[in-house]
Image (tube, rainbow, N blue to C red; front, side, top):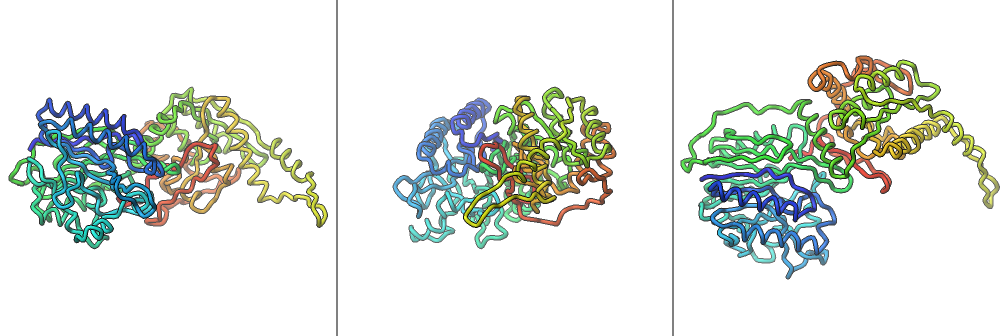
Length: 532
């Protein structure tokens, strides 16, 4: 069997863009005499779309491009993910019934489900943790089985193609250890000659290490080759951004990796798969992710988001501390020096050490730098507040600004006044440099430290920030860009305190914490612990 998988860079909410590129891939595959062409889960619409799933015109557009792909499937078998709509039945919320579905077509016709007769095969295991919210939008297969008086296992069927029985599943269906049903087991029992997992699986730290272990074991257990095709690109749920690394992979019947696609790019893998199911690769060790993979994910997601919103210039408030220094060094790998503006905002307690570290960082990155003292504006705000009088029935009220409130006013002044003003004048946007240690405990202010268009470090613990700083100096720049004084000392309000920063607690929940005013575009870039 001559097969090709397309690690598509899926544009979320853009069926026409995705559909046109899928058609181009089909045409090329036909010229290359490919027999089986595979695309990712939700390759037509994108996946993490929120309320876009409830818009009828969008659903019909997805159907339209699905039909064009079906019509193009001459002399080839095409498998892809799309939304399936049952316009004659409703969900329990009264909206059109929708399924996260796998479609297969050949010679211009759909390959229909042998039990339901529907021209698609639905996702059986529906994730509802962290970024996933499948039960909200897609009809549950358990309800469908109940309505049709079927066993749930009856819905799990191989795709009957001219190439034999294809054991096709969608993403979560391959991660069945926490469920009471195994779609892959059912596919193998029902005579599948090949296992195919089309996925839309965001990158998280060490996900691919676990995926290699799990999928390799499954291929070996069932004695069948297993094809994993994942999306690349960037998707979001309007609050958190998720990078899709791709890393699509082909395992032989012994669980050995035959080929793996490049990460964080649209890529293609071709394979002449032997029918005998004999080993075609040698065993290999599954590598743990490193700081290099974290850097690639953050850089990729940041660049993609900036391209999406048309942003070319970035302003970063630098303090001499490690977080803003890492942010600056990372953005410098994305934008030219003249498009990266560093701003130091000293107060009366800011030490010369931290001011000098900020200046040294800018010099090492060869980018524009300025100092804008904030205390005059902070003093004016405090004086205005304390002079204000409020009249009501019980008498008069006057405000007293505590030291704690002063800190919050200072943080707001840095972000909402200085950085927002500089960014607007510069023609760019300013960043949020908060790390996960800060965002999880709220060690920041909503309109101050949490301001900014993107919090691309907010899913890294403090120890990982330090590791990323050393990686940037050593492996990306090959010299000391982030000053040694910044890496050695942690800054607190203008004083330095040497710290020993360890790794954060293991397996915390993935949190979406960058809640900002609607006027501030952006979100948090998630990279940790989504599991699959």
